[in-house]
Image 1 (cartoon, rainbow, N blue to C red):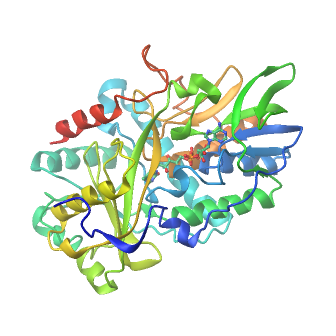
Image 2: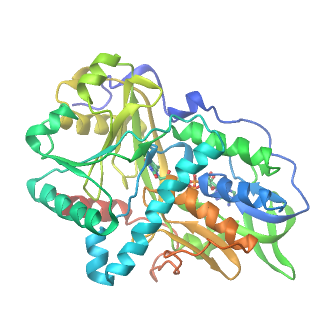
Length: 431
Ligand SMILES: Cc1cc2nc3c(=O)[nH]c(=O)nc-3n(C[C@H](O)[C@H](O)[C@H](O)COP(=O)(O)OP(=O)(O)OC[C@H]3O[C@@H](n4cnc5c(N)ncnc54)[C@H](O)[C@@H]3O)c2cc1C
């Protein structure tokens, strides 16, 4: 198929679809404080959840955001809420023992519950629904490996699952592309724009100051905390949280050298009609394959006449028309009849990944940080935001099995030039 064909609708946008229901606030840079108890860099899920709990704990909190609130991945993601880690339970059990594997997956469960609790407590209308997830295999060997992995999780964690074989998968998804899969009934989905909006409202209601268009250029230790440099001004802060994940830059080179950005791409179709979408995805799950480099799709929350489709993580191409074409080709492998499909939105966002593909929370030279979620930042960012607040407030609950310094490589100074090649290599392993 030639690039430049009509896969984009006449009104297609390169902004995230989620911004339709949750428009981003354009505006002027906010007034800056002279000092604050806690400075938080980054206004995504991690930063806002921490801010809410800290403000309710009696701290004066200021969130500094380089762009408009929610500019990062928190309003660009797919809204999948599960217990996701790139390292399987069986792999961790083999390498580090059963107890460690249970602690790691126990914390993933904690993160999963944290989202449900947050949505309920803050009364966030964001289409949160435990609609179940179908993890799909792209080979029989993968199907067998999935069945073994989830049987281990059921045995040791008590988390139920059901296998769906290739013959039965059409009850869930009208495709013969996959070789069956594993269904987890309690996994959830939400609307990321509305979830973020709800967190932003809750933060403001708790008294948090949100300073938009206020990039933190850098910071240094001061006698009683930190001095931040923002828009030519100095701001004193007793405590500091860096919650910049895939958008981490030179403001803190230590973190920039440890969390690599990965671009990911997502689309939403023009309306196909509810009936057609129901025929394509009768199971109404969040669907995702089990490759390292995943493709994912779901009915659009709040608009069941559209489908969301994403993938091509780690590619780097600023021309979103080309990425739309490539995503369409990938979608046609699943649904060969969708040649007439057009996208109303195609967009990109930056995930953050560590060199050992494991999320982190920690404190380095007095600076608190969390990130490297590798596609699981909706639950992990929610949980780690809470834990960061507990640490600063001196409360219990802030400890984590993920609290070890993220590794770096001697050659890595923050330019992830090798990511596309590394991801292509991993995609070859997937095949
Ligand atoms: C396409 C896509 C699909 C995804 N799908 C899912 C999914 O379905 N489920 C899931 O759990 N996760 C998913 N993720 C990952 C998830 O979105 C992220 O892990 C999560 O949003 C990270 O939240 P955060 O608050 O840590 O960072 P972000 O939301 O990325 O926020 C970081 C913010 O820091 C700001 N910033 C950076 N530097 C500075 C500075 N110097 N001064 C001030 N501000 C600064 C940035 O502007 C940005 O707004 C997906 C990601 C992408 C890109």
